[in-house]
Length: 133
Image 1 (cartoon, rainbow, N blue to C red):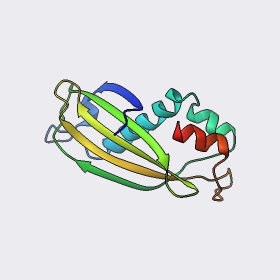
Image 2: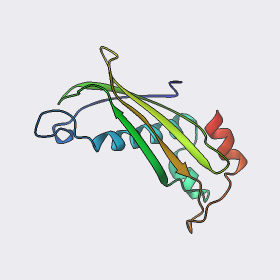
Image 3: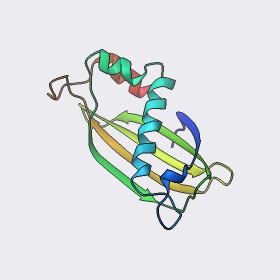
Image 4: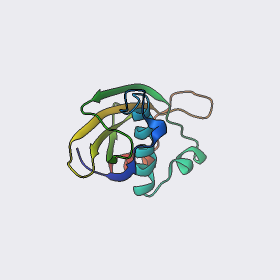
């Protein structure tokens, strides 16, 4: 995976389940953090994408849980993006233990490009260039 965005964070107590590992749904929230930072790193925060009339709802998500992470573990998240067809964007994510590099979870989300009314649109050239940068 091209490491377009690196974000380090610690597992909070609220991120864990009764067995002491990360709660499964938190991974999708962390993917969102990665996407947000990815857009920011590429020079166009997601808020600007929306202010320019393009919205990116998730239409598909996939997660593979690799190894356990627990409270206070330091994790590193990397993300990258690419066009997925003519009107969709795929963001790939990898979360690893920061010190060992052991994979915790990996996966992707696919986002449709829609206007403010929810109608599917072709992404404008500036967005395609941003995604491919």
